[in-house]
Length: 517
Image (tube, rainbow, N blue to C red; front, side, top):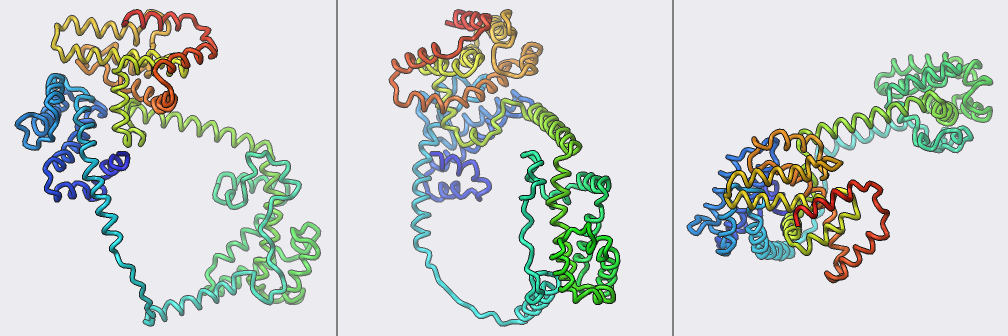
């Protein structure tokens, strides 16, 4: 059933494959049920709009009933007569659960064609023959590709330092095992030099930090060599000019070959031998391999000395705290904006989409006095207002039944005021006795006359969404227990749980139960 539901929800993106299977099967009942399911989703979506339009809801409900359910329906789905009568009696005004019985019926019916389609696909897949074929490529495109490959190899040989015959083994990946990294707080140890390069603001702070410690030469040297590496190898004049500039500025006894060098004496000797001696360094340009070896030594000091000192500074920690606070505020504002836009009652989670059958089963459970009482005691252990939420949902259902009975307006108005005074604007603190946003409660109080029969629509759907999260837990809890044992186990758990110190909430729950029993 779960696979069938997932398939139906992505049917429009899958090219209506299952729909075509039902159409080509010759079974009119299967075809009508698929059509009904899609039209029913359009009906459900009307209740999740920013503004509910009662006229559109009534029109869609009447269309569904006349097309698929009525005795003379053109696309009859074969629903039982008793179910047809129940839907007809509740069609004015229509609510979101009007066609629950019909949806449950067609899903069970569509399970048969779905199973047949899966089996036929498996048989067809088993008939597919796998043929292996080897082809020899020899064309102008292949020759061009080979030429490009040779050109790339030549470029790599010039730019990399792992070239055979250089006399220097490549430095290992820069590790964070120096004593300086022990000074860095745990939450900042994931930072590395590459992350710093991608963060322009922090990179500028790092540059200023090096200047303050008279060590900006390391960063300047690394940057100049990096610029040299990014010059295309075809632009030989520019590469030569940049190489000479780097040699004159950094490869002297004031920096790289001096006492403050990022390389050890042994490493300096290796660089000297690789470049061909001091005379060659003075009079000729340096090879790319030599410059990249120098850059590695510079990067080693940047990452293992200056970067951890920078991360351990008080200024860096202060900036990160401000960023976290700003991020939290931004996320909260975005969340509030999103909730205001779509409404917290909407089924935005994929769990809702893939669980139509579970939602229908949960509605039935809340209408069952025994199951509802057990679930009410179960959620009472999870939160103070959840128990009231079950009662509120049940009372709104009774209000809907009153609307369908077409009784006197004064009776319906009295019921509305009773629900508001008990759950939404209670005289016993807290005034809001159910788990809904304050703005939603205020809207009900101020616009109860304008909203008509849908006055509690948003609030009921919000409460339903909150309670539905606990339904799988409750099903798992009662799986191996009888009805008698369920209540006894819940009572024992309630005794062991911490008592609520606020006596007013206990009095409120007692007041609610007394009012509606």
